[in-house]
Image (cartoon, rainbow, N blue to C red; front, side, top):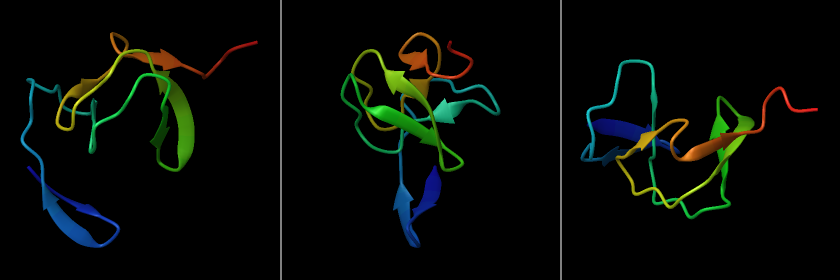
Length: 67
């Protein structure tokens, strides 16, 4: 999959079957890292994620809707 990061084209090999509309890690992410989607922090990595892996509820703790 080719993507543009900061104006530079990069290739990422998908590590999982990623459903349409779901998130993909563009870089390796360590547990505790904040995840940004459309410029907003939406969650925190709950376990290490490699570039190209699916980012979803199994490895991301949501920070939305909390009290």
